Amino acid sequence: MLTRQTPVRIRSTGGRAHSGHLQARHRRFLYRVWREGTRIAVPAVLLSLLINVFVAQAMVVQGPSMRPNLNYNHRVIVEKVTYSLIHGPRRGDVVVIDRPGERMLLVKRTVALPGETVEVRGGQVFINDRPLDEPWATRQGGPDYPKTWVPEGHVFVLGDNREQSRDSRFFGPVPVERIRGHVALILWPLNRIGPLHS
Image: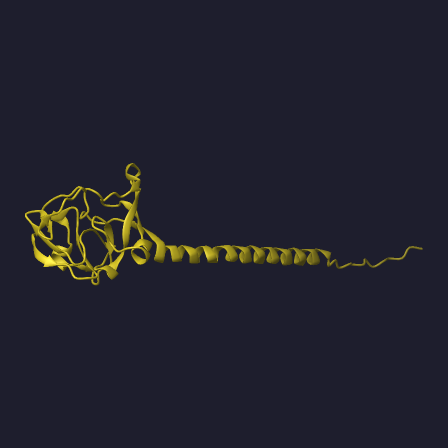
């Protein structure tokens, strides 16, 4: 005699358990990646910030005031340690200045040092009444500047392109504390890569 059997439905939980196990492994993997990435990235970012603030900084030159030695969109490295730890600006250094009220950093050349007198007359720079020998290339022009004493803790700066430069002839000697560093290296264009010679 045949009897009709009711089908038995068996509920399987193995698939869900396996899926949950994979999700847990996935979360652990992502956590390890995040933890390792953070462990590497945070010190790298901090080191980069410290280097940028205290050691060196990449900059793009804007404006014509340092032609022909630096031009629009030249990429340069500004070195910051020397003036803080070794010595102050020297004559011929191309410095980066952070002047109050100026929208951008200024790039100029140091021509007169603390305690000296400086005068610009007919395109010629005079330091302590003697003509300054400028081995770097310049483009003459712009206003003259009367004989002036450079105070302690200040330097007198000019653009190499004198006709198109807003420099110490307009705003006077610059406090050394406003100098962020000096241009040590040209990175771009490729045909100019190397130290910026004064």
